[in-house]
Length: 106
Image (cartoon, helix red, strand yellow):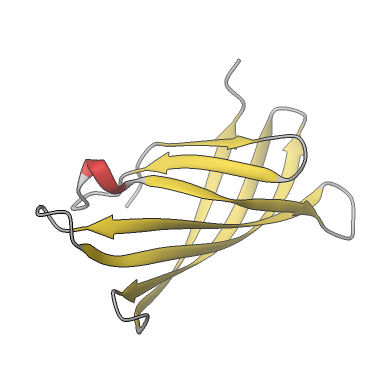
């Protein structure tokens, strides 16, 4: 399954994103995290977290994404992710892997 997403990498090592995979409430796609440079040429990693809430506003759990990223040009990258979903009690309930490709928006 593929879907569009937006991610912004800021100077200083922070990042934000918005992604709504099919079947997910559009109001719950905001991600916040940190990135860092990794060994090797054009390699980076980042971790993000997003929180979910019920329609009544009750905390429902969180998603954490751990990603390795390789710049394929000055304007694009490929990455591999591990996605972990936790319930409101902090229990891991789901883990998935994903890959992505991206192009800079200017």
